[in-house]
Each structure stands twice: as structure tokens, then as C-alpha cells.
Picture 1 (cartoon, rainbow over the protein chains, first blue to last red):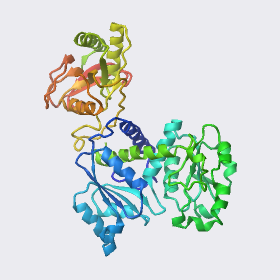
Picture 2 (cartoon, one colour):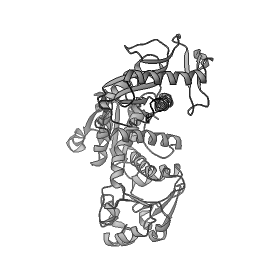
Picture 3 (tube, chains in turn orange, red):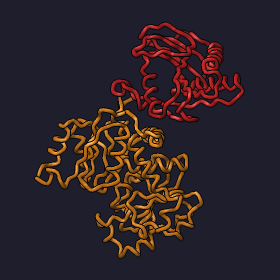
Length: 305
Length: 177
């Protein structure tokens, strides 16, 4: 593995070994000194051309827990605002002595371009509505910790799949690990062409509640035009929100996940978000361990072994 | 591959080292046995079992993985990260690190770094099944199953159930490995 750009095409053994390592890194994070010297002397640049709080902080914490040095880039204060091209910007940062870049960009495919231009590993921290592979891995880790495996689990991904890079990454990772994935949402928020996707679809959330093991709630993304394709947030909440009433109809061991940031009262009920079966904060903690696993895999020794 | 220790030899080594650990530490009350994955772990479990037999009080072994502490991550093939589980507090304990083969000493250096991050033991001792020489660091074992002179190019293979399907120690030239 030379880069982590997408979960599409990642084989089962690769995903499982990343999750296995992530479980061990999760143990490191519980120690009195939650830090190991594995990537001492490496420099990791966080190239976030699009706003991000949790993903950037999570990658920074992961890098620091591995003793790597980090550099952060934010577009507002950079020479991008002086008209420098993306290519010149990343070549400049690379020339400072950077061993890996985490990139987030609003344009689909930007991380692939960086992988062509640069001779260092690139991790996709989210590109447009396309892919967000570390989110999918941490979601799979959270589910695996709860159920032991994803094999045979029924997972419903609910909401704005069309604009969601989280959903696109999750679908491939979850299906590769053996889960049955059903996309649930209004037809206007499901992708038009699902040819080749390993999923079923429905617009009837209530119809799948009793049979799902995992409900994955997507954020209503007002910034990507998600709110303009249904009449109102209240109507969305009524049809697709995980209210307390719907939550009560899930099976006793079903869990609820959400990639954050949550719109309480829209896609997730106020009380549901705080239930012990809503593992949203576990996802956040697992995010750090998962990103440690990815950074270690790409920088910690021979990647072919 | 030439066999240099049988399953019976291995059993005798475990019992002798267990007795030596009891003697050195005047019992096992303060002893913490930590195996270094992969094959240090089954060896640690057997030593703990022998200590339990000898002293009549339960001794449980743990694991200390050093995959995140190696100083040669850039040059050697990537190994899997193993589990770290420490069954009782390290602070003030007499820690016995347990590994299968002592060679360059770099694994043990890494293990000492890992231990220092986890706590402050009273003492750290080292038990190995085979000491094959060729140290690159000032490291020595307190308890040695067998000293086996080797050439650097030879390969020492310790096999132990349940990881392997048989017990014993073999030596081969690099071409056998």
C-alpha cells in the first residue's frame, strides 16, 4: 500500500490488517503515556484545502501519538489566496521536507493528482462528495469492536447518500467485510446510477428498522445543497430522522453511528444521540487509533511485507 | 534444517528457568512475566505455568509488543503489531522479559523503551530459550535455555505450540529459511 485514497478496491485482508493494528493502537491511547516512538523523525503535513475540525485534529493527534512532527496548512491564510496553483503549493511544502501528506479538498480526485505529482504517500482526508477512507475504516472498527465481525450484519446508511463521501467510502469497506448494506433516503438524495454498487436501496426507513444491526445516520449537508432537495428539515426529520420512537423499534443490540457533526433534532433525535447504543464518541476515539494504523502502515517500514 | 532442541529439551528448559526465576526473586509475589510476541508469548505462558506449579500461587503472563519501538522500521520488512497486555502494575514489579531467541539485542533495547513508557519496574530481567550470540548492543540474558554458537547467516527457528504445530528448535542456513 503506497497511498490511502479510496476504499474502493481495497481487499479484505488489507482492511482487516489495518483494523487489527488499529485495535493495538487503541490500547496505546489508553496508556499513562499515550505515545510511541514509531514515526520519530517523520514529518506529516495536513493539507486541508477545505474546512475541517475533527478530521484534522484527529490526524494531528494520531501523528503526534506516533511521535511524528506535524505541519498544518489552512487555505485562508496561504498563498493560494495570492493565486498560487495547487500543484505549486504542494510541491513547495514537499520541498520543505515532508514524508506524508493528508489532503482534504472540495474537488473530487484532488488526492489522486497529489499522488501523481509527489513522491510521498498521500492520505485522502476527504475529496468532495467522493471518498473519505479513514472515516470508513474507523466506522468498520467501531462496528467490529461491538459485534466481533461485519460478516452477515445488516447495515442501513440513512440520508443524503448522494452528497456523502462518508457513505461512498463506507459502502465499499462494509461490503468488502461481508455486511449487507441498504441505502435509505428520499430518491432525490440517493445517487441516480447505482450500477455496480454492492447495495440495496429503499425510501422506507420504518420498513428496515426491525432487521438492521447498524443504523448509520448521515448528516444533512446544507453546504453541499443537501437541504434544497426536500421540502423542509422538519419533514426530513419526520421521514428519515432517528427519533426516540424509531430507536425503540430497533433490535436490542442494534447500534447507531454518525460521522459528525450532528444536527440534533434533524437526522438524530436529541435523546438518541446520548444513548449508550449511539457509539458516536467511540467513533471519534477510534478515529485516532485508525489514523495511527494508516500512518504507520504507510511510513513504518517496508509497505510490501 | 538441523534440530538442536527437542520438545523434551524445551520442557526441561522451561522448568529450570522457572526455578531460577524463583531463586533469584525469592518467590514470585513481585514477579511479572512479559512475553515478547510472537514466540516469546507461548514461552512466557509456559514459564508462568511452571511458576504456578512450583510456588502454588497463580502466576499470569502478559505480552509486551515492541513493533512500535523498533529502531530499524525503515530498513526491515514490516512486521505485524502484536498485542500488549499487562496483567498487573509494572511500577515496582520485578519484570522478567521473555523472548525466544537473543541475537543482536535490538529487540530487547526496544522492549526496555516500551517498558519505560508503561511504568517503572524495580528490576528488569531477561529469559530466552536460545542465545545465539552476535550482539550489537550491551545486552545479556539472566536466564538462558541454551547457548548455541551460530554464524550470522544461519537462521534459528524456534517452534512452539499453539502458534506452530510442534515444539523444538532448528538451525538452518539462509537458503533453508
